[in-house]
Image (cartoon, rainbow, N blue to C red; front, side):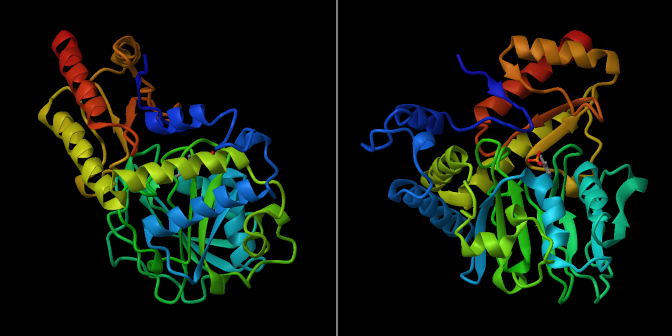
Length: 359
Ligand SMILES: *Cc1c(COP(=O)(O)O)cnc(C)c1O
């Protein structure tokens, strides 16, 4: 029996993908071996890798002048890869701080560049994003970095910040493929896979090719976008199994109707859950409505002593992974692409019952 898994990441994956992987596990399409046993230089694996890239390009309509890389080191690796590939030592770089993940990107960036935090949402208790049009990005900034969706705080940008000629870099780990995205607005988009793309261990980086000539000589080879682009992300042994599984997830998204259909479903799921929270005096969500995440929905109960019983009773009811992040407490439901609306409905029904018993 599979539960509805609301974990923030690693997170639920489509059952069809898991079953497909299972059926191909010991013999990938007549090759006589598992994908995890294949040489990454073999024709079979090269085709798996190329197909995944093709699907990512198609789904996001990635323009030809962008490279699509599949790297290791997670989104955290990219926190250092971004300054090392785009800025010289001590150069100014602009950052927006909207919560835990942007703060981590800022802290990592400080090791390599002169971080200028243009907007810090601390005063709003990280419950919103800077107002559109309010940013003044210094023209000499090497880039503007922001976190498209704060996975812990549940805060999502409803717009793409305008930085003029300065390349916009975004951490899209928990929102990529959840709705359409205009790639041409960005210099770099990166996303760890374990939220919306597949299993942990691989990170997708979409980078405009004209930005590939800015790297510092000391950038580690494994984080060197140009070297990786030149080597089709196979400068060293890539995470082959994870890459293959991401490819299966991309194929699944394609079969479901692509990113536009994901957006339709995700909006319906988010409306259902936020609607239930709004309609109740028992549950609350601290995020300002315009900046509410479609993917990660944090919520509180009136008495924090009820949190543990809530999470335990939900798990009993087959609703897993609802504890909030250890840094903030409360509850959080992550409702990525692979979470069906039936799961969200089951959660809403459970919340109603729990409120009746404890409200
Ligand atoms: C999960 C997450 C990260 C960290 O990813 P790792 O793969 O653990 O490095 C960074 N940013 C965001 C927005 C995330 O959701």
